Every structure is written in structure tokens, then in C-alpha cells.
Length: 197
Image (tube, rainbow, N blue to C red; front, top):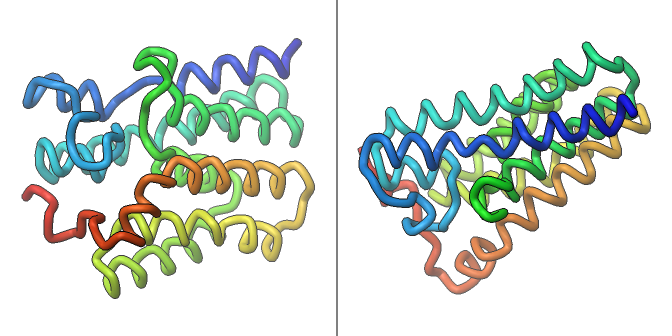
């Protein structure tokens, strides 16, 4: 019963659409009608500027950290924490409040793994920055950094539940970027130069 409660709470936390609410308050309209169609920090930046994007990034990351913190507080088992980590990412990508169309899960995943394996996040962050600087594609940096997280988690901790959360979480994030992957291959994906100041 504790596990079910933890998963529900984590999912509902993940479903809070901060990017959508910030753009709605600042600019009006639906941020999902802009750019990649997500509610995350990059798309918010395109629509409402850098400060709104940074605020979205911070709040989305805090969602991930909070879900893990609550799981550890309520149950404190590795599998319940892993379940909460996955559920909060699912909530962000498929939020019940927005008819299951949310963001890509990157910032929320960062918050999750800052709690669970900060070194893995640091290593993945290096990959993200290198890819974005070289290609100007935030989405490609996010995809490759997410895909690398399970490897770094395995090298750093190698615990079953945490590795399972990393594999499932990374898969969800990559899946959420499927349209971005198509646009990258077609050469139509937006670059950092397209972001609103």
C-alpha cells in the first residue's frame, strides 16, 4: 500500500505543469503550441524568454527531487524510491491536468538523479554541454545525456533498483523526444539561436 501511495503522489507532483502555468501567466496562450510542443524549459524560453525558462527548469527539477524525498521519507526502500523516480518523470511527460501532453522529462529527471546519484548527473551534464556547444541542438544534448545516465549510474552505484529507474527514466525521456529525433534527422530542428532572450 505504501508503494502505491508513493507512486500516486510522485505522479501527481510530476503532473504539475509549471512551464504551462508560467507561460499562461506571463504571455497568455498554451506553450504547447510553440516550438516542440512541450511544457519544458527550452520551449518556455522560446515563448516567454530566458527568465521564464530558468524558472521552469528549477521548478521542474524540484518536482523530481521532491518526489524522491517523499518516497524516502514515507517508505525508504530502494524499490519504492525507484518507483517514485519513474512515476514523477511519467507525470511530467504525461500530466493528467493537460490531457497527458506535457514536457520531455529532462529537468525532472535531473532533479530525480541529483537526489539519487549526483555524480551521474554531473557526468551526463558534461555530455549535454559538449553536444549543445558543438551542434546547437538542446534536444540532441538532452537525448544523449539521458541515454548516458544508466551507464554512469551503473558505474557509480550498480544497485538494481537505481539502475532500473535510470534505464526506465532515460527510455521515457528519449521516447518523449521522438519527434525531435525526426526533426534532427530532417534538419528542421530548432537550434539555440532560435531561443527568445
